[in-house]
Image (cartoon, rainbow, N blue to C red; front, top):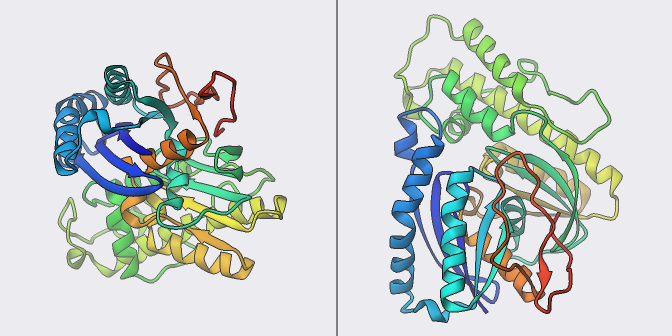
Length: 360
């Protein structure tokens, strides 16, 4: 089965092909340079750029693989959560393609696609705990199988990736700040007492990272006063040692907070021996290393996508679509697009019309 995946939930326009669970090819147009001018994603600009790139990227993918639209068996598209205008561009394109060719269509939960991307190039095993750590979401799940996941916890305010990027902006780093903050952290010495481990004095599995931004601003005022570096900072060699140390301390605080809540999740679900770690922050070097050590101590498996598949991409959408379509699950053309802040409904159905299991 050949599945086309379409991703347009935020500021990346991406398409990919997955055949029988293996990635065939992918194309992507990034909008990072445009949004860097504003220090963050501008929704109206993002949707206009998706509209500009979507058709051209599809044509390029078909040309590179010597395919016609009729050769696609199923089209999978991120239906949400995300920026509504951006999502509508992708879902409209997917529905039009399905209507024109008669292929099957699957509206994919963007969050589940991130976690299922762990199965690209490696075998998934269940039951598993899933930790999604991205710019918009920090969530914990318990997976019984590939299509059945119970939500255990989520961020109640800022996600970890948002805290990274906004703290990077406070520190004068180039956009997006999270990636550069991690590079600077590798050059610094962390102070374990500098930042709090937020929202751990409770019994739940939710997250809160909004306070870390304030802590980063206060630490910068107290520790970096009188120092100068090019702003926005683009090269690690231009960073003073004090800035690198602060970044290392921030990195450590986030990693240890994520680890504490995940440890709690495993304690409540001892049957799970696998951790699916995904999202943009899963590419963070300290976060990866911390969870590698943790799962080694647990004598379990850590599954993480390659760094290129941690950020928003279409390969994860195509793979998730293949997983669902292989089980006979999909949608008709009336499925909704779901903006951020609303739950993605469990409305996939089996091909013959009977209600089927849904991802969350």
